[in-house]
Length: 80
Length: 397
Image (cartoon, rainbow over all chains, first blue to last red):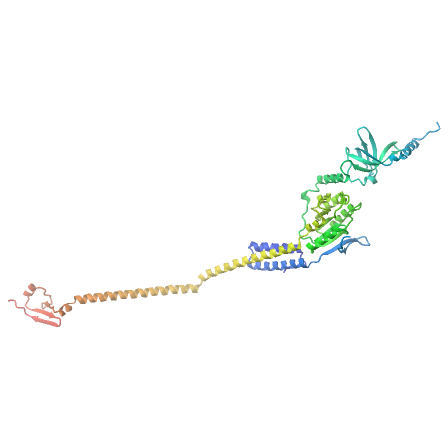
């Protein structure tokens, strides 16, 4: 079972591409192919879900009172 | 003579005389640079000359600081400043506050010079360009927090790829402080490993407005950045030094946002394609396994011992049947032969002949008498009819 919470979108996409390549290669035994297919299907679904549901996080680096930089939420307001 | 002056007094007198001429307080002189020297103090000393005369000039550190190009000997320039006397040496000189290249614009010249210098250093080499991450998780944006540029970038990044965290490093993008702030922000992002990708830029403006992106500190900061940098300055035709040094040049900030991330909709199409390929590959695999199983099953069936016994029993049956048939046929043939022989025998039977009225003559010893000649020698003849035999004595008279 792929753990998408700890796995980046990039890693998932790369793994998915690797799975497709392996399956298309045809040298993988049937039983493993079935497992790969299952994993791939789950990865694809999870990636799709991420794309649909992701909410962009936007922050701005601001100098705090002590002079160190910290992140504060940035509201994307209309220009001027 | 009462009126004896010290050298110092005289020189100051002359200096005062110069300083009282308004025309000398703000002059602009055209000439060729020669003897150009930059002192460790930061002051610049040079001579302006034309075909017939020369003029000593000094440009103090404070004024030289705003020089955007590198003055070189032989260069034709316009020098702006005031003419005064340096009492210590007793010479008059031009106190230059601005030096402008004659002909090409100052900014243009500075641009070309820095471009040439950095190019010679190899900072624009394609081999230096770093590939951009395919799916950046964090994107640092070095630009002004106000204005259309950041707004456009955030809008496009949000639409295309909301998976990335966007970190705005607010800087001034024009004016004296801009270059320092921009280069420090780039360095900071690298030091803190803040992002996998940096977008550095601003919206459109005049060449003056965009100037920070033509300054050496910014170019150096971009070149030194471990994080790949997309340069996004002004509009399509605006080309800055930053564009040459960056790993990728975007025509505009919006364009940078498009180049920075993959598009969500395209990714979804790609995902669907991958799923389809995956399914097709598995189907092929299953189909292959199925036909292989079938082929193996057929071969196995052929090797089934029960089936072999059945097969042999069948051949045995067939052999037995053939044998029986052959026997029967042989029997029938014999029987037919017997019948035929019996009939032939019957036809040849003497009894049959006798029944038609013939008789057989034999001697008492049983020898057949088949001619009159043979009968003449016999005393006794037996005549056999169909129903019995009589003994006769022939009359030989």
